[in-house]
Picture: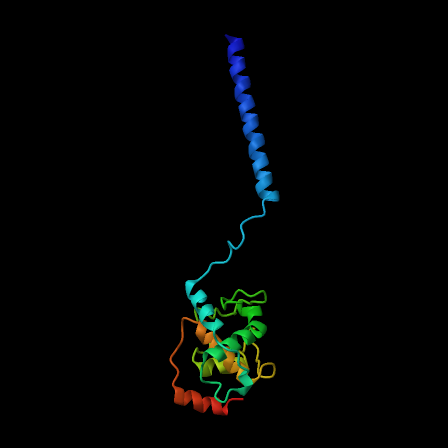
Length: 179
């Protein structure tokens, strides 16, 4: 009888060892050999896809040739997206979520639009022009032309969920005096 129990223990030990070796091989495969899942870290927002499809049909325009750059248009939004990618994405992130590689604790999420100095077009322009004291937001007056700053304003307003209404007559008056 003792020999029979010993046989059952050996069978259990062999099954246990095979299970452990199989588990370890599976772990090594997953951890070091399998290439992983592509794109799992990128959540696709249907609204973003629709906006990209809409912008794909827009012709490029040089913001410097626009007579009234404070008036938003799909062309200026596209130009603003390009200027934003060059000048703003480092801190605010490619999609405006305050997740850029050079972000600071003060970096604003432009999508939620928790504005420190206001979210109207004139206020956003003034922020780009003058910067924000006490934060990492510097003045872009000497780095980005006036019309490109307006284009960035239009892009930011196109991605934000907090878009205060502009009074167009006040905006035009502001724009004519802004440098």
